[in-house]
Length: 261
Image 1 (tube, one colour):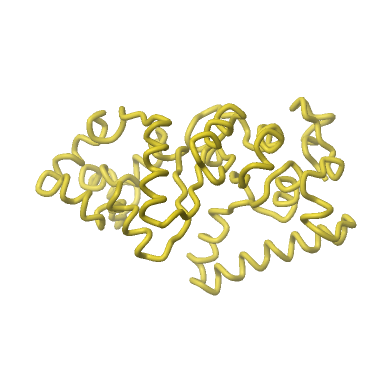
Image 2: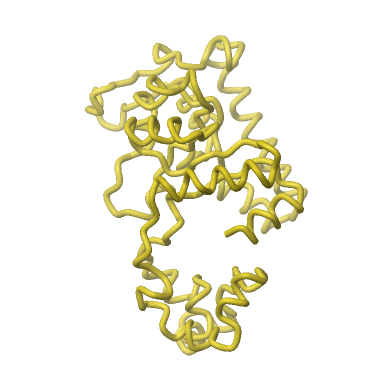
C-alpha cells in the first residue's frame, strides 16, 4: 500500500481516491473467463485460448515492486490458487484502515486531498466526513460489483443534502451524455466522473480520440443547457430539482420518467 502511495505521489498525482467499490473485485464470470484479473493470468491460459485466442490476460500489479516481492517465485503458483480466500478475497477492510490510509497519504503528499469512492448511503457519507475525507464519490461502480445494488442517482440527493456543504460530492456510474451530467448536477453533485467514454475514444484514436470524446460531451451539455434555457451550471442547475421531473420517492410518475428533464 505504501509503495503505491509513494509511486503515485512521485508520478505527479496530488489527489488520492480510494476505490472502496472495487477494493475487492466482484464476481464477474466474463472477466474470469478472459483472465481479466492479475491472479488468473497464468491459471487461465487454456481458457483464454478457447474464448479469446491471443489474449494474454491481465498483468496489472506485476509492475509494483512490493507486489512482486510478496509473491516472487511463487507468483505462478499463487495465480493457480486465485479462488482461495488467502490470495484474492476474504479480507474485508474497515473504517480504521481508511483512517490510517488518510494519515499516510497526508504525510506523503503534504496534506493533499483524499477522496473515498463507493459511497451509497447518508450514514457512510457522514462517516467519511468524520474520519477526514475531503470528498466522496457516490457510485455503485455502474452496477458491476453487486447484483441488485441501489441506483447511485437514487441516493445522490439525500447524500448531497446531508454533506454537500461540507465536502466535495462527485457522481459516477453511467454518465454517457450531457443530460446525464445535467441530472447529476441538479440532484446535488459538484462534479461528475466518466470512465468508458474516454477509454473508447483513447482506444480508437489515442489522445486525439480522448480529447474528441470529452469535447463532444461538453458540447452536448452546452447545447442541452441552451435548449432548456439555463445559462450557468453553478447558478442555474446545481441542486435545482425544479429543472427535473423528479420523484424523490423513487416511484416514477410514468414509465421511464424518473429524473427526466
